Every structure is written in C-alpha cells, then in structure tokens.
Length: 498
Image: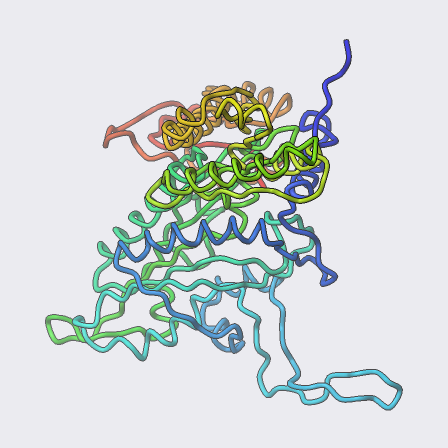
C-alpha cells in the first residue's frame, strides 16, 4: 500500500521537535534571526499575534484595565531591592554597560563611555513599574490602579526554540495595586480566569487551572496561579500566569498610602502575563502532519479562494465568479466581524497554492473553476479535518458562520479528548514511575507537598508539578499521597514540560 504523502516532514510521530520547526517554516510564521536566540516574526505569524492582542486587549479593558508603557531599561539598583526576584533572573539578564561606540583606529567599533550604573534590559517589569506606582499612590482613594503593558522582554536563554523560548519575545504584563490583600488576590484569580477563557474560547486549547508549588512559583510572589495545556507529545506548556505578590514588591518600591484610618499602609500588588509562546502552544495543540491548523476565531484569514483556470477563455468568467463569492463571504459575518477572505490570483500552479494555504492553516479553502460557475457551486476543503465537499453557493454562504463556529468547537473537543486520553490518576510511586518511564502525559496524584520529592522526580524523570488542582465546587477532597502514604487534601498534576 502506497504511503500517504504529507505536507510536513518529519511526521509528529517520527520527530516532534523537528516537526514543530517545519510547521513554523511551512506556515511562514517566523524564522531565526542573525541575533543569537532571537526570531523574526513574519507577516502571517504577526497577524496571528495581532489577533491575539486584539482579543486580550478587549478583555483587559472590559475588566477595567488601561494600557501604559514603561522603559525598556531598568537600573540595576531597582532589581537589587527584591533579593529573591533578582537572584532568579540574574543568569538571564542582558546588561547595558556603555552608552556609545567609537572607532578604535583599526576600522572596528568599540564601546566608549561606561555608564555610572549598569542598565538591565527588561526581563519583567515589577521593579520599574513599582517605582512609578510609588509616585502615583498617596491615598486609598487612588486605588486600585489597574495597568497593562504590551511590550518586549529579554531573557538571555541558553537553549532557544521559536516562539517557545527565545532571548527576546513579545508579551503583555499586567500590574495592579490594591488597598487590601483580599482585593489583590481576587484580581489575581480574575485575570487567571481571563486567560482560561481566552485559551479555551479563542485558541480552542483546553487548559487546567491551578496554583504553582513553592518550587515552581514566580520569584518574589506569595502565590502563582497558572493555566497549563497539554501538547500533542504529551508535554505540558505553561500558557499563562497570574501572581499574587502580597506586599513584597510594594515594600521594596515603597508603594504606600494613607488608609481610611489615617495611618500609612503598604499596598498589595499583583502581576500577570502571557506571551508569544501562545503561538507555539497553538501550533503544538492543533497542527497535523500537513502543517498549521488555526482556530477560526484567531485565523488572520477564514477563507481563501483559489481560481481554477485551465484555459484562457475561462479566465474572465471564473475571476468574476470568484469576486462575487468573495463579496458575499465578506458580508456574511462571523464572530462579530466580517469574514476575512482572500482571492489568491497569483500565477502559480493550483496545487502549489493549495498546499501553501493548507500549511498556513486557513480554516476553509474554496476552489472555483468553470464547472462551479455553471452550477453556481463551490468546492471546499475544511482544513482541520481535511474533508472535501461540494455545495451550492447559496447553501455554503448561508451556513458559513455556523461552519466556522463548528470548526472552532470541533478543534477544542478534539484537543480535550486527547488530553483526557493521556491523563491518568496515579495512586502509588511504582505506578508513577512506570507511567513516566513509558510515556509523556499528565499524571494526577494526591501529594503531601514535600519539596525533596519534587526535586527527586525532576532529577529522575524530568517531571515537575505543573499545578495544584483547586477543590471542585468547594469540596474538601482528600486522598492518600502516592509517595508517602499520608493523608492529604492536595491534588497535583505532574508532567514533562516546555
């Protein structure tokens, strides 16, 4: 039997890391830069990021947040104020030590003027935003402050991979100040729910919500909440985090206010963020051996029309029909906006164009030729299942919005079923070791919270606790720790991760 040909080589089952790189290349999303560890995000990839930004930015503003911008450079003394924070990021910091260049007389440019104080290229902005907050906050009447920043950050990574881990990446970071601990914790949980809704409702990516252990917590935070998604190789991706910072950063930056009693108090803060690694997650959750698959709610284009012209005498009427269908599609509407449609009239072989758009993950590819003109029909390829069908143009247009919605739901359900298939309740250490020696996936156990056991499992199996699961509907869950045999109410998810 002849082996089926695919658009991507190697296949997922053969070499998942290389498959991932080839999906990015085939989808024309990004490429490596000449700058070590950095990437060039190409137009199709950046259009996808813009759609993510658009949705998230609307969510943030609906919840009362305003956008602002803070400096890329952070004075070294700011980071030194929060010891745990700077220690964790120290190895990843890029440091600016000179202000200008000069010629050395041999045709080379060399750093010329040492700075009085080194500047850190932003790895995250808690410290420098805290300095601004300390000037903005005077009274409880100034609170809460709800700020979001769209920015780039630099973390000097040793091992990089496009979208997942690069030395420079794009993200948003929210920073808020509150009068009470309860308000700051509520904000932390509210923004995690925002991320969950975005991941599931727009990315069609099912996630687990929970809290990080002390070992995995954001440096300087009191609590770190997260969303975790399972990739098709069974590994987990931390797709977003929301941190309750307590008063740690507020003390370091002296964010103080006169409270309702007239006494000076220290504020409570939170921070939260997602980045372009969401694109990496989207690729690894949905794509197949033919390339990228995009959920309709985020796809830069929903429909691509390919004119099929074999004879020059057919050109005019086929193109006229394509334009007629294009106009009707655009006016159909989907998800509260026009359907994004494009006619690919380039002078390339039809098969080449078709595979290009398959690789880019466009939800629907419509081919229109002379027979479709005569029958007033359309020939459609549904990308996420690779199903082909023909329909009258009227029926297709009438059902277009529903079909895109169905694709969105189908992608989520397929990913959810994959996660459930690869998620196992584990009751003993032996079962735990057998599970992670054989495969990748989610191992769910009761766990007493012993850091030594966490470190041992990471060392032995490269497995970490991705999150502590919340109690369902306030129930007081209880069980036996798989490692110690002790009774505990803490249930956790273990996995290998990116």
